[in-house]
Length: 299
Image 1: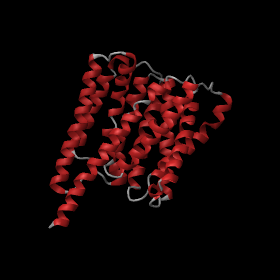
Image 2: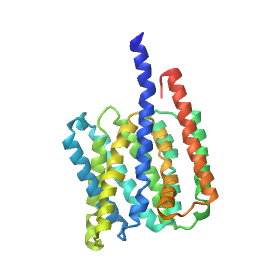
Image 3: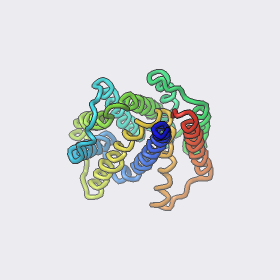
Image 4: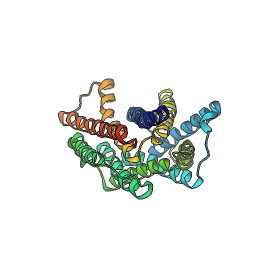
């Protein structure tokens, strides 16, 4: 009976570890806004610079820790995942320059809806009732969270932000397709694509390099996006695409928290309420999902 118990315990523990990894990944992602403000550069130059450092960081870690390279990648899924993630980064950074930050974040975080659809069609991971309930709560919470700053953007930026949400979900689905392989390859290749795409922009929009700017780029490349990539790759192998997207919703509500801690700027009451709804939705779907896993052994 002990082997069966160990198997059931593992089935419960793996989603919990995966969700924790996605949570801390989102925490790191949420710091990007503060550091981007230090850079008065073209958005594609910012994205490309960050990806250069991230690619070097990921490659260095892989060389130092050979066990990370364990497992082969399906070339088709690896390329698809890399292209989707590179498109996510480039479209989102550009959207932030063409529309309001609130519009960009709100529209990108339609990703859970795309993840539910793509996950069902491609992965056959059909969302459970708690996922649909959490989706409705998250959408309501986001609208409330950004209520005071919505509608201040432009159509081109809004479209890019919406596209970013789709690519983000597609990227998650592609990594889930590699859950028995090595999804880190997609993340490394994505940064190579992003940096290559941005290369011409360095000549047309040369960045003014300073010590604070260099520090911001190094932090974003190594910690904010580099370390976060490992956490996301670890987590997505252990939770469904839609649960990963729901957990990542902690990112947009943490952005004003960093602003509050650094500048003392307090969020509006509606933002606090909206953030509370989003957190409640993520916790709700997680508790129900873990209870199902403990009863049936499935995530």
